[in-house]
Image 1 (cartoon, one colour):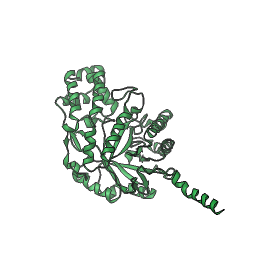
Image 2 (tube, one colour):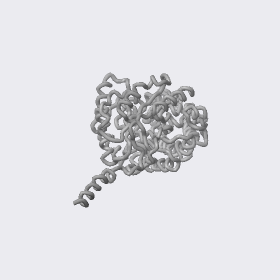
Image 3 (cartoon, one colour):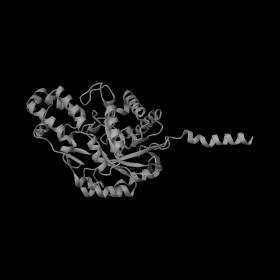
Image 4 (tube, helix red, strand yellow):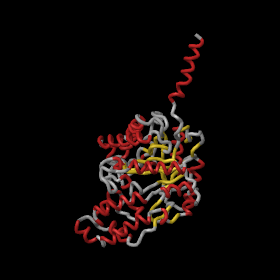
Length: 408
Protein backbone atom coordinates (compact mmCIF):
# COMPACT_ATOMS: atom_id res chain seq x y z
CA UNK A 1 0.00 0.00 0.00
CA UNK A 2 2.84 2.42 0.84
CA UNK A 3 4.44 1.82 -2.57
CA UNK A 4 1.12 2.41 -4.34
CA UNK A 5 0.55 5.61 -2.36
CA UNK A 6 4.08 6.80 -3.18
CA UNK A 7 3.57 6.06 -6.90
CA UNK A 8 0.27 7.94 -7.04
CA UNK A 9 1.75 10.86 -5.12
CA UNK A 10 4.68 11.04 -7.54
CA UNK A 11 2.29 11.18 -10.49
CA UNK A 12 0.38 14.04 -8.87
CA UNK A 13 3.58 15.97 -8.22
CA UNK A 14 4.91 15.37 -11.72
CA UNK A 15 1.68 16.25 -13.54
CA UNK A 16 2.22 20.03 -13.58
CA UNK A 17 5.74 19.58 -14.88
CA UNK A 18 4.62 17.18 -17.60
CA UNK A 19 1.91 19.62 -18.74
CA UNK A 20 3.97 22.81 -18.41
CA UNK A 21 5.31 24.83 -21.32
CA UNK A 22 8.80 23.74 -22.32
CA UNK A 23 10.31 27.01 -21.06
CA UNK A 24 11.73 28.07 -24.42
CA UNK A 25 9.73 31.27 -24.75
CA UNK A 26 9.55 34.71 -23.19
CA UNK A 27 6.71 34.62 -20.66
CA UNK A 28 4.70 36.87 -18.35
CA UNK A 29 5.51 36.93 -14.63
CA UNK A 30 3.44 39.56 -12.86
CA UNK A 31 4.29 42.91 -14.44
CA UNK A 32 7.59 41.58 -15.81
CA UNK A 33 8.62 39.71 -18.91
CA UNK A 34 10.94 36.78 -18.25
CA UNK A 35 13.39 35.11 -20.61
CA UNK A 36 13.60 31.32 -20.77
CA UNK A 37 16.65 31.42 -18.48
CA UNK A 38 14.60 33.18 -15.80
CA UNK A 39 16.14 36.64 -16.24
CA UNK A 40 14.00 39.73 -16.67
CA UNK A 41 13.51 41.11 -20.18
CA UNK A 42 13.11 44.87 -20.44
CA UNK A 43 12.10 45.59 -24.04
CA UNK A 44 14.26 48.15 -25.79
CA UNK A 45 14.24 48.48 -29.56
CA UNK A 46 12.61 49.77 -32.71
CA UNK A 47 9.83 49.22 -35.28
CA UNK A 48 10.37 48.00 -38.84
CA UNK A 49 7.66 50.36 -40.06
CA UNK A 50 7.04 51.04 -43.78
CA UNK A 51 8.57 47.75 -44.90
CA UNK A 52 5.42 45.59 -45.02
CA UNK A 53 2.89 48.38 -44.38
CA UNK A 54 3.89 51.49 -46.35
CA UNK A 55 3.00 54.89 -44.89
CA UNK A 56 3.01 58.02 -47.00
CA UNK A 57 4.98 60.32 -44.73
CA UNK A 58 7.94 57.93 -44.70
CA UNK A 59 8.25 58.53 -48.45
CA UNK A 60 7.68 62.26 -48.06
CA UNK A 61 3.99 62.11 -49.06
CA UNK A 62 1.21 63.78 -47.11
CA UNK A 63 -2.22 63.35 -48.73
CA UNK A 64 -1.28 60.01 -50.30
CA UNK A 65 -0.79 58.29 -46.99
CA UNK A 66 -2.07 54.68 -46.87
CA UNK A 67 -0.80 51.56 -48.68
CA UNK A 68 -3.63 51.33 -51.20
CA UNK A 69 -3.47 55.08 -51.91
CA UNK A 70 0.30 54.91 -52.44
CA UNK A 71 -0.05 51.90 -54.71
CA UNK A 72 -2.76 53.60 -56.80
CA UNK A 73 -0.67 56.75 -57.12
CA UNK A 74 2.36 54.77 -58.33
CA UNK A 75 0.19 52.94 -60.90
CA UNK A 76 -1.12 56.26 -62.18
CA UNK A 77 2.44 57.57 -62.32
CA UNK A 78 4.43 54.76 -63.94
CA UNK A 79 1.96 51.96 -64.77
CA UNK A 80 1.07 48.64 -63.12
CA UNK A 81 4.07 46.60 -64.26
CA UNK A 82 6.62 49.13 -63.07
CA UNK A 83 4.73 49.51 -59.79
CA UNK A 84 4.76 45.75 -59.17
CA UNK A 85 8.49 45.65 -59.83
CA UNK A 86 9.05 48.59 -57.49
CA UNK A 87 7.25 46.87 -54.63
CA UNK A 88 9.10 43.59 -55.08
CA UNK A 89 12.45 45.39 -55.10
CA UNK A 90 11.38 47.57 -52.18
CA UNK A 91 10.55 44.54 -50.03
CA UNK A 92 13.86 42.89 -50.94
CA UNK A 93 15.97 45.94 -50.07
CA UNK A 94 14.27 48.09 -47.43
CA UNK A 95 15.09 45.67 -44.58
CA UNK A 96 17.96 43.22 -44.98
CA UNK A 97 20.23 41.19 -42.73
CA UNK A 98 22.53 44.20 -42.50
CA UNK A 99 19.74 46.28 -40.94
CA UNK A 100 19.10 43.68 -38.26
CA UNK A 101 22.82 43.44 -37.55
CA UNK A 102 22.92 47.22 -37.11
CA UNK A 103 19.90 47.27 -34.80
CA UNK A 104 21.46 44.58 -32.63
CA UNK A 105 24.75 46.47 -32.52
CA UNK A 106 22.98 49.43 -30.88
CA UNK A 107 22.11 47.26 -27.88
CA UNK A 108 18.45 46.82 -28.79
CA UNK A 109 16.90 43.49 -27.82
CA UNK A 110 13.55 43.60 -29.65
CA UNK A 111 12.09 44.60 -33.00
CA UNK A 112 8.39 45.00 -33.77
CA UNK A 113 7.20 44.05 -37.25
CA UNK A 114 4.05 45.82 -38.49
CA UNK A 115 2.33 43.94 -41.32
CA UNK A 116 -0.82 44.12 -43.45
CA UNK A 117 -3.25 41.21 -43.23
CA UNK A 118 -3.34 41.08 -47.06
CA UNK A 119 0.10 39.47 -47.00
CA UNK A 120 -1.65 36.32 -45.73
CA UNK A 121 -4.46 36.33 -48.34
CA UNK A 122 -4.89 36.20 -52.12
CA UNK A 123 -5.55 39.94 -52.29
CA UNK A 124 -3.46 42.35 -54.34
CA UNK A 125 -0.78 43.86 -52.16
CA UNK A 126 2.68 45.31 -52.76
CA UNK A 127 3.20 43.85 -56.21
CA UNK A 128 1.76 40.37 -55.91
CA UNK A 129 -1.57 38.55 -55.85
CA UNK A 130 -2.10 35.09 -54.40
CA UNK A 131 1.63 34.37 -54.39
CA UNK A 132 2.84 36.31 -51.37
CA UNK A 133 6.14 35.07 -50.00
CA UNK A 134 5.26 36.31 -46.53
CA UNK A 135 6.28 33.32 -44.45
CA UNK A 136 9.58 32.96 -46.30
CA UNK A 137 10.28 36.67 -45.76
CA UNK A 138 9.38 36.64 -42.05
CA UNK A 139 11.18 33.32 -41.57
CA UNK A 140 14.35 35.00 -42.88
CA UNK A 141 13.81 37.87 -40.45
CA UNK A 142 13.42 35.35 -37.63
CA UNK A 143 16.75 33.75 -38.54
CA UNK A 144 18.49 37.14 -38.67
CA UNK A 145 17.05 37.99 -35.25
CA UNK A 146 18.11 34.61 -33.87
CA UNK A 147 21.68 35.14 -35.05
CA UNK A 148 21.75 38.59 -33.39
CA UNK A 149 19.95 37.70 -30.18
CA UNK A 150 16.86 39.83 -30.90
CA UNK A 151 13.23 39.06 -30.11
CA UNK A 152 10.47 39.74 -32.64
CA UNK A 153 6.92 40.99 -32.05
CA UNK A 154 4.44 40.35 -34.89
CA UNK A 155 1.99 43.26 -35.15
CA UNK A 156 -1.10 43.12 -37.38
CA UNK A 157 -1.01 46.79 -38.26
CA UNK A 158 -3.75 46.55 -40.89
CA UNK A 159 -6.66 44.22 -40.06
CA UNK A 160 -9.38 42.99 -42.42
CA UNK A 161 -11.89 45.81 -43.09
CA UNK A 162 -9.85 48.13 -40.87
CA UNK A 163 -9.64 48.33 -37.10
CA UNK A 164 -8.72 52.03 -36.81
CA UNK A 165 -10.54 53.93 -39.52
CA UNK A 166 -7.63 56.09 -40.67
CA UNK A 167 -4.65 55.80 -43.00
CA UNK A 168 -2.57 53.68 -40.63
CA UNK A 169 -4.79 50.60 -41.06
CA UNK A 170 -5.18 50.99 -44.85
CA UNK A 171 -8.93 51.19 -44.30
CA UNK A 172 -11.81 53.04 -45.91
CA UNK A 173 -12.31 55.68 -43.26
CA UNK A 174 -14.11 53.64 -40.59
CA UNK A 175 -13.20 50.60 -38.39
CA UNK A 176 -15.50 48.26 -40.30
CA UNK A 177 -13.88 45.21 -38.67
CA UNK A 178 -16.10 45.66 -35.62
CA UNK A 179 -19.33 45.21 -37.54
CA UNK A 180 -18.29 42.85 -40.35
CA UNK A 181 -18.63 39.18 -39.37
CA UNK A 182 -16.74 37.91 -42.43
CA UNK A 183 -13.83 40.27 -41.76
CA UNK A 184 -13.73 39.14 -38.13
CA UNK A 185 -13.57 35.50 -39.19
CA UNK A 186 -10.73 36.29 -41.60
CA UNK A 187 -8.95 38.12 -38.76
CA UNK A 188 -9.26 35.02 -36.56
CA UNK A 189 -8.26 32.62 -39.36
CA UNK A 190 -5.11 34.58 -40.21
CA UNK A 191 -3.97 34.73 -36.59
CA UNK A 192 -4.65 31.00 -36.21
CA UNK A 193 -2.50 30.30 -39.25
CA UNK A 194 0.31 32.59 -38.07
CA UNK A 195 0.29 31.04 -34.60
CA UNK A 196 0.33 27.55 -36.03
CA UNK A 197 3.36 28.45 -38.16
CA UNK A 198 5.33 30.02 -35.27
CA UNK A 199 4.09 28.03 -32.27
CA UNK A 200 7.52 26.44 -31.73
CA UNK A 201 9.61 29.52 -32.49
CA UNK A 202 11.32 31.07 -29.42
CA UNK A 203 12.52 34.16 -31.33
CA UNK A 204 8.89 35.29 -31.48
CA UNK A 205 8.22 37.29 -28.32
CA UNK A 206 4.51 37.53 -29.00
CA UNK A 207 1.57 38.26 -31.25
CA UNK A 208 0.06 41.77 -31.21
CA UNK A 209 -3.56 41.27 -32.26
CA UNK A 210 -4.28 44.70 -33.75
CA UNK A 211 -2.60 48.09 -33.88
CA UNK A 212 -4.31 51.22 -32.51
CA UNK A 213 -7.95 50.08 -32.75
CA UNK A 214 -10.76 52.64 -33.11
CA UNK A 215 -9.55 56.17 -33.79
CA UNK A 216 -11.04 59.00 -31.74
CA UNK A 217 -12.84 60.68 -34.65
CA UNK A 218 -16.07 58.67 -34.56
CA UNK A 219 -19.25 59.72 -32.76
CA UNK A 220 -20.03 56.08 -32.00
CA UNK A 221 -16.61 55.27 -30.57
CA UNK A 222 -18.12 54.30 -27.20
CA UNK A 223 -20.17 51.61 -28.92
CA UNK A 224 -17.14 50.51 -30.94
CA UNK A 225 -14.99 50.44 -27.80
CA UNK A 226 -17.48 48.06 -26.19
CA UNK A 227 -16.84 45.57 -29.02
CA UNK A 228 -13.06 45.68 -28.65
CA UNK A 229 -12.44 43.33 -25.71
CA UNK A 230 -14.91 40.65 -26.91
CA UNK A 231 -13.20 40.51 -30.32
CA UNK A 232 -9.76 40.41 -28.71
CA UNK A 233 -10.89 37.53 -26.51
CA UNK A 234 -11.91 35.66 -29.65
CA UNK A 235 -8.49 36.41 -31.11
CA UNK A 236 -6.75 35.04 -28.02
CA UNK A 237 -8.93 31.94 -28.13
CA UNK A 238 -8.09 31.37 -31.80
CA UNK A 239 -4.36 31.62 -31.16
CA UNK A 240 -4.55 29.46 -28.06
CA UNK A 241 -6.25 26.71 -30.08
CA UNK A 242 -2.89 26.08 -31.79
CA UNK A 243 -0.29 27.86 -29.66
CA UNK A 244 -0.54 27.61 -25.86
CA UNK A 245 2.79 29.27 -25.10
CA UNK A 246 3.48 32.59 -26.82
CA UNK A 247 2.55 35.94 -25.28
CA UNK A 248 -0.42 37.77 -26.82
CA UNK A 249 -0.39 41.59 -26.76
CA UNK A 250 -3.55 43.69 -26.51
CA UNK A 251 -3.56 47.39 -27.42
CA UNK A 252 -5.88 50.05 -26.07
CA UNK A 253 -8.50 51.97 -28.01
CA UNK A 254 -7.89 55.46 -29.42
CA UNK A 255 -4.26 55.13 -30.55
CA UNK A 256 -3.43 52.47 -27.95
CA UNK A 257 -4.08 55.03 -25.24
CA UNK A 258 -7.50 54.23 -23.75
CA UNK A 259 -7.67 51.08 -21.61
CA UNK A 260 -11.10 51.73 -20.09
CA UNK A 261 -12.76 49.24 -22.51
CA UNK A 262 -10.82 46.40 -20.84
CA UNK A 263 -12.59 44.92 -17.82
CA UNK A 264 -11.34 41.31 -17.74
CA UNK A 265 -7.67 40.39 -17.69
CA UNK A 266 -8.05 36.95 -16.12
CA UNK A 267 -9.57 35.14 -19.11
CA UNK A 268 -6.22 33.79 -20.37
CA UNK A 269 -2.64 33.27 -19.27
CA UNK A 270 0.41 34.92 -20.79
CA UNK A 271 -1.27 38.08 -22.04
CA UNK A 272 -0.01 41.66 -21.69
CA UNK A 273 -0.98 45.14 -22.82
CA UNK A 274 0.65 47.66 -25.13
CA UNK A 275 0.36 51.45 -25.31
CA UNK A 276 1.57 54.22 -27.65
CA UNK A 277 2.58 57.81 -27.01
CA UNK A 278 3.40 60.73 -29.29
CA UNK A 279 3.67 64.31 -28.06
CA UNK A 280 2.64 65.78 -24.73
CA UNK A 281 4.81 66.09 -21.67
CA UNK A 282 7.64 63.64 -21.12
CA UNK A 283 6.59 63.03 -17.52
CA UNK A 284 5.05 60.27 -15.45
CA UNK A 285 1.82 62.28 -15.27
CA UNK A 286 1.46 61.95 -19.04
CA UNK A 287 1.04 58.16 -18.70
CA UNK A 288 -0.40 58.01 -15.17
CA UNK A 289 -3.62 56.33 -16.32
CA UNK A 290 -1.63 53.70 -18.22
CA UNK A 291 0.54 52.97 -15.19
CA UNK A 292 -2.55 52.75 -13.01
CA UNK A 293 -4.12 50.26 -15.41
CA UNK A 294 -0.91 48.21 -15.47
CA UNK A 295 -0.81 48.10 -11.67
CA UNK A 296 -4.48 47.19 -11.47
CA UNK A 297 -4.12 44.27 -13.85
CA UNK A 298 -0.78 43.09 -12.47
CA UNK A 299 0.33 42.41 -16.07
CA UNK A 300 3.16 43.88 -18.14
CA UNK A 301 2.73 47.08 -20.14
CA UNK A 302 4.89 47.87 -23.17
CA UNK A 303 5.21 51.10 -25.19
CA UNK A 304 5.03 49.73 -28.71
CA UNK A 305 5.36 53.10 -30.42
CA UNK A 306 6.86 56.38 -29.26
CA UNK A 307 8.93 59.12 -30.85
CA UNK A 308 8.93 61.95 -33.42
CA UNK A 309 9.94 64.56 -30.87
CA UNK A 310 13.05 66.39 -29.66
CA UNK A 311 16.08 64.44 -28.60
CA UNK A 312 15.70 65.64 -25.00
CA UNK A 313 12.04 64.57 -24.98
CA UNK A 314 13.03 61.10 -26.15
CA UNK A 315 15.59 60.69 -23.37
CA UNK A 316 13.34 62.12 -20.69
CA UNK A 317 10.51 59.80 -21.67
CA UNK A 318 12.85 56.80 -21.81
CA UNK A 319 13.83 57.59 -18.23
CA UNK A 320 10.16 57.77 -17.19
CA UNK A 321 9.44 54.45 -18.90
CA UNK A 322 12.43 52.74 -17.28
CA UNK A 323 11.50 54.07 -13.84
CA UNK A 324 8.03 52.59 -14.28
CA UNK A 325 9.05 49.24 -15.83
CA UNK A 326 7.52 49.91 -19.27
CA UNK A 327 9.71 48.68 -22.13
CA UNK A 328 9.65 50.42 -25.50
CA UNK A 329 10.23 50.21 -29.24
CA UNK A 330 10.63 53.61 -30.91
CA UNK A 331 8.93 54.39 -34.23
CA UNK A 332 10.36 53.96 -36.80
CA UNK A 333 13.73 52.42 -37.60
CA UNK A 334 14.02 53.90 -41.10
CA UNK A 335 12.31 56.52 -43.29
CA UNK A 336 12.96 59.50 -45.55
CA UNK A 337 14.56 62.25 -43.50
CA UNK A 338 15.32 62.13 -39.81
CA UNK A 339 13.55 61.27 -36.50
CA UNK A 340 14.51 57.64 -36.97
CA UNK A 341 17.58 55.45 -36.59
CA UNK A 342 18.36 55.37 -40.32
CA UNK A 343 17.56 58.35 -42.54
CA UNK A 344 16.92 57.84 -46.25
CA UNK A 345 18.32 60.54 -48.53
CA UNK A 346 15.77 61.04 -51.31
CA UNK A 347 17.26 60.59 -54.79
CA UNK A 348 17.27 63.07 -57.64
CA UNK A 349 13.83 63.29 -59.19
CA UNK A 350 11.97 62.21 -56.07
CA UNK A 351 10.43 65.65 -55.55
CA UNK A 352 8.51 65.21 -58.82
CA UNK A 353 7.06 61.98 -57.40
CA UNK A 354 6.06 63.81 -54.22
CA UNK A 355 4.46 66.61 -56.25
CA UNK A 356 2.38 64.08 -58.19
CA UNK A 357 1.34 62.35 -54.96
CA UNK A 358 0.13 65.68 -53.59
CA UNK A 359 -1.53 66.87 -56.81
CA UNK A 360 -5.20 66.76 -57.72
CA UNK A 361 -5.79 63.29 -59.22
CA UNK A 362 -9.57 63.23 -58.83
CA UNK A 363 -10.24 62.69 -62.53
CA UNK A 364 -8.44 61.15 -65.50
CA UNK A 365 -7.82 64.57 -66.98
CA UNK A 366 -6.32 65.70 -63.66
CA UNK A 367 -4.04 62.64 -63.60
CA UNK A 368 -2.82 63.38 -67.14
CA UNK A 369 -2.22 67.03 -66.30
CA UNK A 370 -0.28 66.28 -63.10
CA UNK A 371 1.81 63.33 -64.33
CA UNK A 372 5.54 64.16 -64.70
CA UNK A 373 7.89 62.40 -67.10
CA UNK A 374 7.26 58.67 -66.80
CA UNK A 375 10.81 57.44 -67.43
CA UNK A 376 12.26 59.96 -65.00
CA UNK A 377 9.72 58.82 -62.40
CA UNK A 378 10.64 55.17 -62.93
CA UNK A 379 14.31 56.02 -62.43
CA UNK A 380 13.48 57.97 -59.27
CA UNK A 381 11.53 55.01 -57.87
CA UNK A 382 14.38 52.60 -58.62
CA UNK A 383 16.82 55.05 -57.07
CA UNK A 384 14.64 55.32 -53.95
CA UNK A 385 14.94 51.56 -53.48
CA UNK A 386 18.73 51.82 -53.69
CA UNK A 387 18.69 54.81 -51.35
CA UNK A 388 16.76 52.79 -48.77
CA UNK A 389 19.48 50.17 -48.39
CA UNK A 390 21.45 50.41 -45.16
CA UNK A 391 24.73 51.34 -46.82
CA UNK A 392 23.10 54.36 -48.51
CA UNK A 393 21.31 55.62 -45.39
CA UNK A 394 22.54 58.13 -42.85
CA UNK A 395 22.64 56.91 -39.23
CA UNK A 396 20.88 59.44 -37.02
CA UNK A 397 23.40 59.27 -34.21
CA UNK A 398 21.80 61.88 -31.94
CA UNK A 399 18.47 60.09 -32.28
CA UNK A 400 20.00 56.71 -31.48
CA UNK A 401 21.62 58.07 -28.33
CA UNK A 402 18.44 59.90 -27.35
CA UNK A 403 16.51 56.62 -27.13
CA UNK A 404 19.24 55.21 -24.89
CA UNK A 405 20.87 52.95 -27.43
CA UNK A 406 24.48 52.96 -28.58
CA UNK A 407 25.91 54.17 -31.87
CA UNK A 408 27.84 51.20 -33.37
